[in-house]
Structure formats: C-alpha cells, structure tokens
Length: 103
Image (cartoon, rainbow, N blue to C red; front, side, top):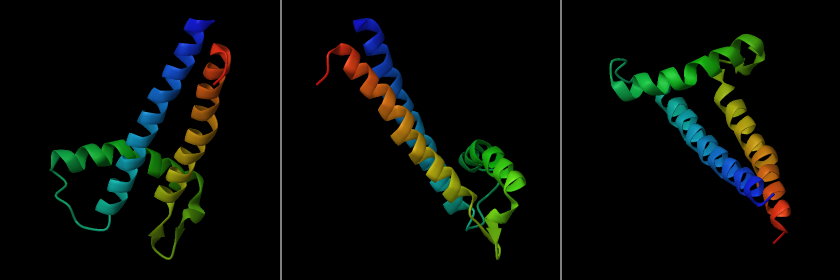
C-alpha cells in the first residue's frame, strides 16, 4: 500500500505541474492573439500548435464563445484546467496521503 500511495501522490504532483504549464501556454497563446506575431517564429508556432486544436474544438462545439469578436475559449480552457487541478489532482494526492496513514 505504501508504494501505491507514493505513486498516487507522484501522479498527482506531476499532473499538477503539467496542468500549470499548459495553463501558462494558454495564457501566452491568448496574449499573442492580440498582436500580430511572426507566424514563422518557432515559439509562436509551438504555442499555436499547442493551443489551437483545443481552441478550435471548443469554438466548433460551443459557438456562443465568440461574442462581439471576442473569443472566450481561452477563459473556458483555463477554468477547466483549474477545475481539474482542484478536483482530480487534489483527490489523487489526498487519496495517497490517506493510504499512507494520513497527515
């Protein structure tokens, strides 16, 4: 049980870090959409390829996210990331701590 508890805690912490990194990628990608960056810049291409599939999926499935020319899909993605971080990650870590004997 001790090993499984450590695995749950480790998975929770890694998932937390990955969600935080992706949240910052979404924020930077949204900020870059306000300016006209060089589309051939490798950083801009990475940010676009990392965020645009999720943004376009949301825009396609929730067309009301574009109101008056403003795209709210980054806000929805950030809200989903925060929810996953608070619900899933916290549950994984707390389950691991409880399996170890509590703190």
